[in-house]
Amino acid sequence: MLQFRELIIALTSALTWFLLGDTPGDPEGYVQDATDIRTEYDFIIIGAGSAGAVIANRLSETADWNILLLEAGGDESMSGQIPLFAAGIQLTSRDWQYKTTPQANGCFGNANQQCLWPRGKMLGGSSSINYMLYVRGNKRDYNKWRDDGNTGWGYDDVLPYFLKSEDNQNPFLAGTKYHGKGGYLTVGEVGFRSPLGAAFIQGGVEMGYENRDYNGEFQTGFMFSQGTVRRGSRCSTSKAFLRPVRNRKNLHVSMYSHVKKILINPDTKEATGVMFEKHGKVYVVTATKEVVLSAGSVASPQILMLSGVGPAAHLIEKGITPILDQPYVGENLHDHIGLIGMVFLLDEPYSIVSASRVMSLPVLLNYTLFGGTAMSLLGGVEGVAFVNSKYADATDDWPDIQLHFGSGSDISDDGAAIRYAHGTTDEVWNEYYKPIVNKDSWTIFPYFLRPKSRGNVLLKSNDPYDKPLINPNYFSNPDDIQVTIEAVKFCLALSKTDAFQKVGTKFYDKPFPGCEDKQLWTDEYWECWIKSSSFTLAHTVGTCKMGPDSDPTAVVDPELNFRGIKNLRVADTSIMPSVPSGNTNAATIMVGEKAADLIKKTWL
Image (tube, rainbow, N blue to C red; front, side, top):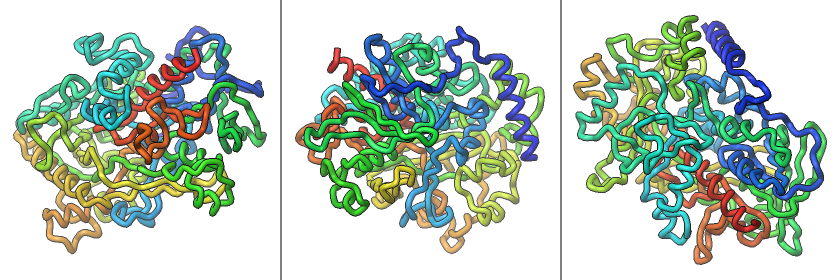
């Protein structure tokens, strides 16, 4: 079955390439790897991901500026363009394949209690590996940033940057107060609906929630997923922002370029350039204006520490001479984490079962030509909801729980990819999931939106190729687990609505391995399962925290300038003081848009 699945993916990818392939005038033509790298540029951007690609596009609009964009990986994969199979990109060469340190309160079911942390290692970064959900977060998130001293980062300040990027394909939303039209980034609902998706929306209505645009005036409610998709395929920031401008003479994109360190003058504390390695050759390139660090919440602090900027004692311990003692580089790490792997069985043949309903030639051709089959689902996530736990104020539009609804589940792909992406061990798979593999099912991934637990990123060694030590410290604050338990209870209540009972929904109630000693359906049992089957949403933020002068823990100022180092800016998820209430890709693109304007304001 696995070989047939791979054949179908390969055929779909090849047909898509043939029909929509590169031509000289194609705005989606492939980016060429820079081979003639100069010794000097005006700006060097580290990381061609969700923010870096945007910044490169916007800065290269100024014809007098020369920009070098460095990316450690290569181009996107063709198979990665098929939304449904997003999980299959993880644990490949296009994934950094990070793992956390062993967790004291989470990922008990993973090998060595280490959580998997997928991150894109290619053009587009994690926008080329994620599940493509377009979620901006709540107004209150950004207003809190502003109220904490980050002038210019309130909701009314950042909304224009969301709109600037967006080209929304929904005619009822595009060009309205809350949605842009004509931007580089294609956003819309996918061209496929299952009866289970409809049940999800109707079940939410039964529970008193509205069917609404969660990126609009209000967030609380249920909706079919909005995603960064174009003609049924992934629309990464590489496809959106780099490919259309790939022929600009002042923009060089250098792939397979692993940054060793940022060059910083120890006397003047000024960033002067970057040292990186490409195909075995070490390059030293000067930046006459700025170095912009957009490598993400893991790699940005790692690169800073390798460059001599970070906690001095830690750097000395790793054999690095400190240039600036900045103890909060790598701190304030936090993330959205929830319970992965709940299975709700049903009587009707409505779910997305890869073996029997997706892997067929008619479906392949339909998807390739029209993008309207289950293959266009965002990693299988058909619906999203924002709801309130008993700890939230139901009269306020600031929900504390998010739900990802999947019209299939961990058992729906014959164990080919999802189980590995989720870190499910063979023991758990064989005991818990294998007896029901490929049965009709659906799932929900519930999680707490405003975690209080904090961790950090530290160096394993002074070798730039060594992966850093990542400790998110999941569930170290007990409030996080309590709200997550309430999120699980909400999912069970939703499964009992008339909408889901009409299709014969029944929760798969076999005791989860490792939790058999707990009384079923108690808070203690749910806590055990959550801590056993924890999974990151990859919404990691905070490791180069933005804040005002009065905040001693702030690493960058509200203009994204690095405190204490001249001509160095950070622009990615690491600058977020607190994680937005939702998926972070849209917010990261917004950071890229705003950063580009801040840089232009400085130098034009």
